[in-house]
Length: 448
Image 1 (cartoon, helix red, strand yellow):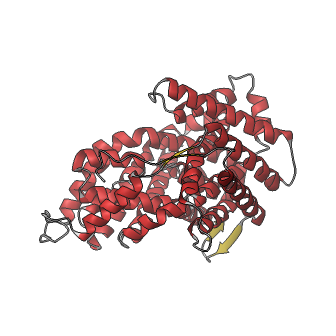
Image 2 (image 1 turned 90 degrees about the horizontal axis):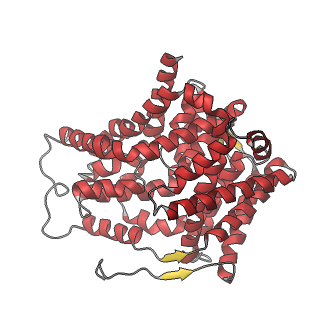
Image 3 (image 1 turned 90 degrees about the vertical axis):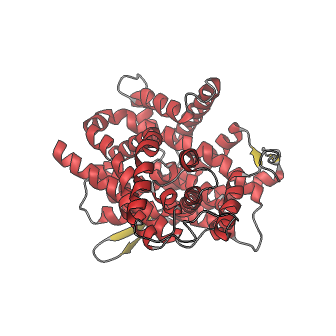
């Protein structure tokens, strides 16, 4: 079907849909079971990796989503994706309650927070791009390695190279890979590095701000597990770094990282003779056709409609239950906290809609949360006391459970891309985190 005439199938879900209750039940059961399992530490000798409940939630959700014994309907997986978009805002709202009381810490780390973003620009280019050249990924190397490749990267590469270019296929490959296993890689990398006790915990927190809500949450949670005494500072710095990456990432991507990656690729391949990957094609190659198939799957998704209040009720309800399991006891503060988070998210979405998207909901929810919990607010003390009843890690457990239940729809895409994206993608994500952490560590040392 022609791209101009294709219309997505519209599917409406709500609490009146019997099938939707299957998804709700899965979220509650899997998230509760994951939290009940607790953390597990794997000793590697010189370091250790901690597998937190959020990883169990992600893995169990993914298994349910991927298994073929009793397949989970694709439309329900897209409904989980709709809940996920609200879950990220709820997570940011919870983080904002930590940022407000720690504004002094954030300001003191100012230069490190600003400069660590260079790790997001150059980390993957310096380490992953040469590996992709060695594996002969062709021009797709540029799209796959100039950043971690979230949604904004599509627009950047399309504007510079076009939607039918190898570079665009590289973005698609990295996008799919990061969506499926990005949070796991960041969590394991952060856990391993944190256990080595070499970097400043604040630097480890800043390194988690890679511009992806789920990856940031996974990385910050791993650092908190290694340094629980600094939980509030770690979460505040990670959230701020992620916000900076989200805001500055587009500008740095367009003007710095994408041009640098393109020139570096050309430099490394300057003596290489033309190959099938580099040559212009009169007929679409199998690689191009595979890329088009991935693009069609990514971009041509059903139009699943789920009322925002339904998503809020499902996530907040599951969140309260998981918070009870994490704390091994009930407190009305848990209900109050999720009620506040729900109101903040609903208000931020309303303002974003009122401004026709000119003021993103993410910015609104973080700003309102920080103002409400900062020392200038008369409610700051009460918010700090009440929000402590909901462990930040328990919020991530619910969020990544939802993410896991939405992953099955991405497996066909993952199968249709080259195996080369696996080693390259691992290096892109790990190198971005490591480089950002190293820069923040050095600047914190110099800044004192």
